[in-house]
Image (cartoon, rainbow, N blue to C red):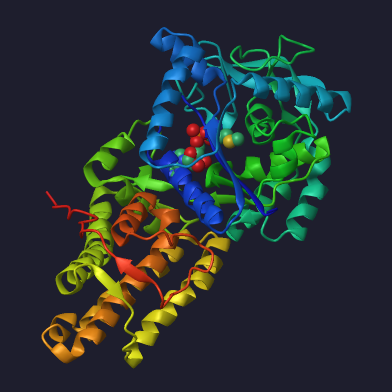
Length: 507
Ligand code: ME8
């Protein structure tokens, strides 16, 4: 097999524990990764943490611990969160990993040696107590936005990356690959606001920041933010060793999934750095929208959020996964509220899927002791259900290729809705009373079970825990994507019915 697929999330700042916004990107990446694995791709799904910088050093100092001690705790918490959300990442990179540090130093040195990085002067407004540089527009009433104290203009020696040199080459990449930046609106914003006005060279080192990767040939400098952070996507694969097995196998990335606010770093700085290094650029940067809570962006610095585990404990893993994947058109901003989560769970998971599954399995037990096979006593309307089941593969592929995850889920749940409608049409409880209709009754139940089985194969990408429970009750090993069509020759020997989801009472 040579179909590979490399997908990444941003590496998040472990300045505080993660919130539902981080879960959003990570759950979406997980669903895409799982879908690709189902399809038979050899997937590498990477997430991780971006651990350097003045902010984290300051937080650690406030907590009275070293930066490493500070981030270690948050990362333990993050890994536990990903576990409780069934996140199937293959690799968790930390920018404090030795391999990453060495890789970043080698990248910096190579770019310097070939003249793409040069030494210059960084002029900025500096807040001494906060050890932070600000731009004029970031100041609040001319003062530091963090502490409100005076800032002063300072000049410090710094290294710069010749970003401006790559302006035309970037435009060439965008023109050649219409799917390089998606959704398309983000590409237009980027070209108009950043590329057209002209790119400036980028400051890539600091002497005022201590918690970072030292420039090995000039150790009073640390590598500043974006080279350190962005390089994670290749150092994890073994770069700068271009012959490293993982690098050869998985690079270039197929999708960098990021929030909209960092799309430009991924679509401008990152490909420029890669071109300078002489290696392939990623195939796609997808900038999704923000989850909004109480009218504003969920934010670590505002602290306006709950620990996502509270939602998982209250409503279940798959209610949370389903909500974030289904509620918001992927790409756009959307609101996260518990009320909306409850409504979605009750409508789609409890009433539609849960009810369908419980009713179908219960009837199969009541009428046939759980043993069901296809008696092929068909009515015309059966075909419309079977056709939509067989069409799922094509529809879901199209939707997932465009990362229309919410629409893919809607199509999948439409099959469950059709099954419920089919029960109303076929009225198995009426058939059950007529001895001459027993074969028709069994056919109806078979059609339902087989439709649920085929749909559940895809459901594994989105709601793996629920899919597993369904397959256990169906007592089937036909759970793989290959030849996943309605198979009239399957036979069922069902386990006892279960309630997949509990109705959530609104308080
Ligand atoms: O930016 N809605 O880290 P970060 C949707 N370390 N997504 C959200 C969100 C929200 N309200 N809040 C956060 C960084 N996210 C850098 C990245 S990558 C080389 C370096 C998600 O901790 C979204 O993916 O601030 C966003 O881009 C990311 O978390 C920002 O995480």
